[in-house]
Length: 175
Image (cartoon, rainbow, N blue to C red):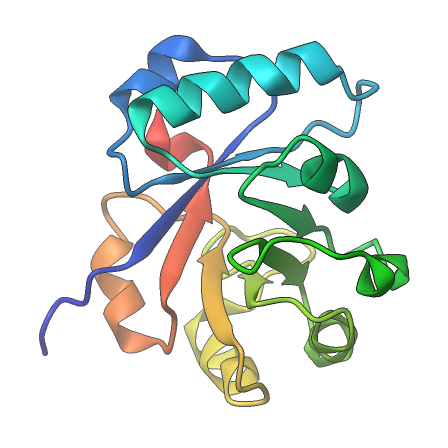
C-alpha cells in the first residue's frame, strides 16, 4: 500500500504565532473559537500571518465575514444547519468545509454546498466515535471528499491509508 499525500487542516482558537510558524505552507489553518465573540482585528492578524507564510486561512461559522475579509474559505460546524450562505456571492476558489458525525449531518452538509466534509471522530473515543470501520462505511455515502477528524496522532497517521479520506484535521497533532 502506498502513502498518499494528505491535506492537513490545523484548528486554532487564538493567534499562536509560534505554532503557525512551525506549519508547512500546505497546512490549512482554520480559526475556530466558539467561546469568544469574533474579533475582526485578530482575524486580520491571523490572515496576514498565514498569507506571509503561504498558508490558506479559513474562518469557522461565519461565511459572511470570511467573504468580507477576503479569506480563503469558511468552515461550517456540524451544529450549523443554516443555508443562508447559498445566496452569497464569493470568489471562485473560495472553499466551504463542513463537519458531520453521521449520515444525516453529511446530507445536510451536501445541501449546504460544502466542498469537503470533515467526518468525526475516527480515533478519539468520545460520544461521536466512529472507528475505522464505521468511518469507511460513512465515507461511501457521499461523493464529497472526506477529511478525517478526531484523535489523529503520529502513531495512528498510517492507519488513514485504510480509509477513503483526502486529508486529516486536528489540534494536538500540529503542536
